[in-house]
Image (cartoon, rainbow, N blue to C red; front, side, top):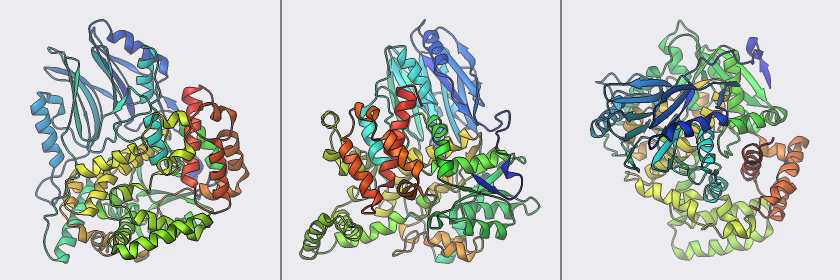
Length: 636
């Protein structure tokens, strides 16, 4: 990676992890069994942060409970309960403003219902497990968006919970092995990640965001104590709503300002990261905010022009870097290690390098703008869905001939006609099926991609059913908010936060997210959908609210996102071309029995000649194979 201008090249992690990062494992089982399971976790090799393995401490070693913790995970005790907790505290709203502490009230009520005192008063990022001394009872909790992961598996009369799958895998192997869940593998091939509650291991489940888990008498119960809602009850003229939204945004960003000196911001040059950086810069004009930006040599992917513009406008202590194909290849093994199950979001690469640059500059906490698209209406998919809906609502005598034309053109396999055929196909579907087709690789190519053995264990629509269930669960009167709810549960909680938190942790950095503050999310749920996407204009009210924060060029720029130009590298970079052949078309990959390699060859050829963009599909197949080589085969 190239960097500029000053001492940013000091990228070697500090000799200790100072960020609020850590892990824990709790085994709760019949008397005499907990210690045995707990000892097995020591063989797993505890997860690292910033390249440094954080050795576990024994925090409980009784006949029923064995618990180990590392890093900033700490012991919690009250008169009735013991526990272990990861907690990055964020101040609650002061009261009297636009943002209220709805999650805090819900969690305090969950504490009352469960009779578990340590739950009360938790705010910010947290994951905890607590066990009652007098009763054979355990309670666990995740924060609003599960910033810290939490997994569980049931044992004979007991339960084990951990913040990393590798720790539970060691426990399962003590019982005979950790079996791959082919349904989770199928979900990965559609979404590029494995959605809640699934994990790559058949017997392990994710605890959902905003959830209280209770284990008693051999039975697990799960209750969502908080989730986003959309009452859409905020009314008033545009200037009033604009001012109220601005007040809510500024309050949340300022409350997420880390203490001390060792912090900074991600600054991509987009509206979200620029808003966060600008608000923090204004909060204390006497302290220059450290900002960190990553660009690419490929101009269509590079937002560095806007990152520089924002840095100048806000007077930041700006650090810039550039990532190339060689950098991406060099970090693949570290990223596979960073994720405890297959994960196929390629923007983990620039995220890691940005966090590593920050750590080299003495920063251990970054403030990020993630979540803005999903609460303010900024995702390109929302405007695109409006266009699809207009087509879907056409009279049948117009829509049906268009479908026949699209099907006829598809045989040409030429990119312009392929795009037209894809539009007609997707526009003919209702939601949420239509929304799902953004992420439906294995569903679209079920018969061609998957082996007969794998197809025999799967149902083509099972990934779509995950989306349908979340869509039905949304407490939202408008279509836009139902789609935004899907994105908060999946694109944010399962994908984006996993990407950023794990990549940053690999560099030894923690991340906070002011736009995912539950109070701000609750407030934006009160804003009617028409203020978020107006016609095809995204972020309508947000851009009014940030008019005096953001430079006009950033408010008006076309959204790019934080994508990696790996599609170009697959076509033109020898190293990536060799990687595809050496991994996806290898004998080892064939012997796994998952895929039809002849189809994968056609897919790669189709991408290289430009008939279609299969970047995401090729990348997630690569990451799946690399994960198997690291965690199943035991080699790199």
